[in-house]
Length: 122
Image (cartoon, rainbow, N blue to C red):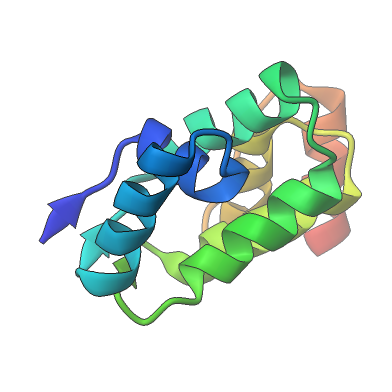
């Protein structure tokens, strides 16, 4: 089992360094890989803030990777739902995870935008 770091996922998605892309692609396609939520949040942050990738492209790209049978992520349904919320709401990704989790938990926050998202699921 391989635990992926953000830079592996970024090289795989961006293809900005061909040698690193090929190494990352081989690893991701041919092995059972784990992606932890913190790494996924870092990938979202880097893609949006550093590379200026649109929320829609980030969401679609990451959902596509998470659908690989060999990619293991804790609570995959919640994370996919979080990416869909991220694509459609003006929230950062961690708030989108909290919003998605509000289906299972009572989330408490003073953040008005997050509360509005949570209220939309009630």
